[in-house]
Amino acid sequence: MIPRYQRILFWSLIGSILLMGAFLLRGCRQAHQRLTALNDATPIAAPTTSATEEVTLYLASDADATITPTRSEVALPQEPSLRARALLEHLLAQYALPASGHPLKSGPTVYDVFLLANPADAKAGQIAVVNLRGSFVDNHPSGVEAEQLTLNSIIGTLHAALPEVTEVRFLVDGQPHDTLAGHVALNRSYSLSDTTTRPTAPSEAATQP
Figure 1 (cartoon, rainbow, N blue to C red):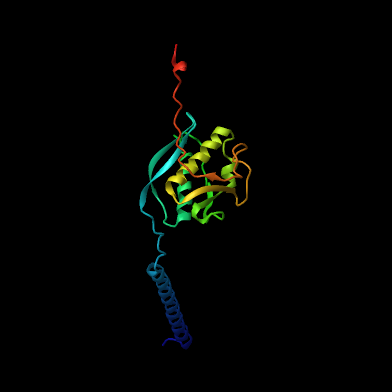
Figure 2 (figure 1 turned 90 degrees about the horizontal axis):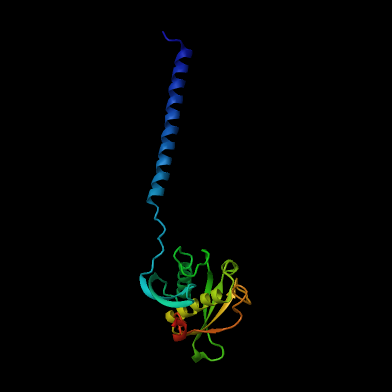
């Protein structure tokens, strides 16, 4: 006959095993529920991408000091201010490419573009205020020609894309700034116009032997 204390020990062990099994089963169910909840969670919708459209970029070339209108496919938002900012970011990014004819350092270039009514005459067209990043200005090559080419590139591109805008002004980090890189003024307004320039043809005298 099995002693009483052995029967008590046996059933105690059986009870402990069943209790541990119940805890393990409960833990497995909780883990399964957490994994299921993660898998069933509705994902955050990805931002809607804009369809690409053809725009005109006025690209500068240091080799012959020209501005050339060039067609390009770009995805742009519809809101005018965001559209202008994205367009200028795309334009200035072209100058960081290896084959650029007007090399500039890569990196963010424009904080914001604000489109404002002309306070002097509401019928005179809008004013674009381009807020450049200080890092872009600090890294821009110094020199009258290099600075003027960059500004003419921006002016021509805005003129082609935003016909309702007739004037552009510049800020740097939200503040007025004297020059782009020591020479060409940023503390004045510029009229938007077609800034296309072509190489100057050599004169007849210059071609004579």
